Structure formats: structure tokens, C-alpha cells
Image 1 (tube, helix red, strand yellow):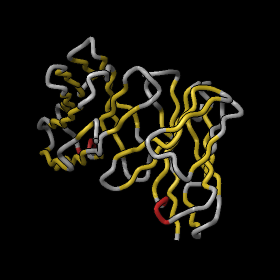
Image 2 (cartoon, one colour):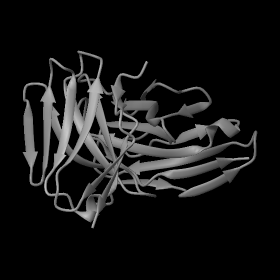
Image 3 (cartoon, one colour):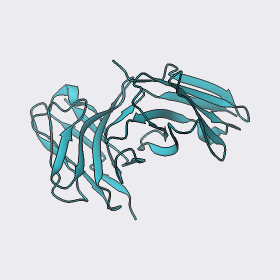
Image 4 (cartoon, helix red, strand yellow):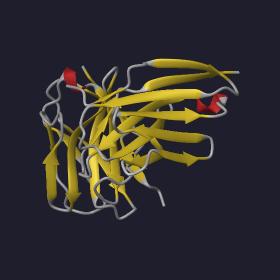
Length: 111
Length: 112
């Protein structure tokens, strides 16, 4: 049973437009959510996070939205740049040491 | 400040061989973990440690051993490698529970 799901394996977006990456979760005990970005042959790098007491968190071009009632979070990238092309993972934690990761979405930003 | 380092970058093993994947961090983080990444599976937690001398199992612990004798190091041991352990292995560390994890560059393992 996959507790964190990223149902879109891939996404293509034109440069300058908005990229929206989605993530759904099933465990209502999750209270901390993170997005990671991964380039080929590198480890994941932390991008942005949100705790369950918020519904939005912004950092520059990146915004994460959390809808607790729908158990859904999304990452918005505006404007998208070719350097944003990577695999994006969402992850969730229930305040413990265990993080559950989604399967990732490969974003391709077209110049 | 090197962050999280992993060695080797790439390794080929024959079935039945043993090896240790090394992981070290210089951020004085208490929490360290090992993940494997397989196509279509995301990152799955193998083992984790909440401090020196304390380890616990994650989602996919079978075939792997860990120990944590110091805060800095968290090696992952494959006692008898199997082709199913072909994967990319990532080590990560964080300050504590629910905190942001920082990942190493990964070790690509091929078991023939």
C-alpha cells in the first residue's frame, strides 16, 4: 500500500509557464511534507517543505500548497526554467524518523 | 563542510559476495538513514539510526545490516549480495525527527 503517490510519472512544460506537480497521501498522521529535486547521477536535494499547520509555503519561484482535507499537496514552479528539468519527489513524515517518498515525477521544461 | 559523503560511487559484485557501503556526515546530525532507489519505486527506506548505538529497520531491511558506532558514520553491509539488490543507494542525515533530510550523491550497485 503506497502511502504517498505521485500519479504523473512525467510532465512537460514550456519555459516561462507554470509547472504543477501533484502528490497525494493516505496517512492522516503525516504532518510534515517535503519536495526534493533530483538530477541524474546525483542525490536528491531539498527544495521546499510545509508543515500541516500551514496551507501554503513560498520560496522564490517555488510554492507548495497543502490541502489536508483532500490529503493532497502540490508544487508550483513559476516561471519554469530549463534548469528545473529534473525528477521531483514528494515525501511525508509523521514527526518520526521515517520518511515515505513518492515515486517521483520527471519534469521537462522545454526551451 | 562536505555534508553527506558516500563511497564508492559505483560497484560491481558477484552473487554471494559481501561489501560495505560507506556513509559519513560532518553536520553532527543525529539521524541517518539508508534508502534504495529502483525504477518506478521511488526511494525506499532500508535502515535508519537515531543516534550512535541505535538503529532500526525501515521498509526493506532484508539482506542488509547496519551499525552506528559514531555520530558521523553509518555503514551499510550486504552480507551475501543478490541480483535483487542491484540498485542505487542513498544515505541521508537530518538534525532530528521530521526535519529536512540531506542526501549523499549515491552509490550505484550492480550485482551479477
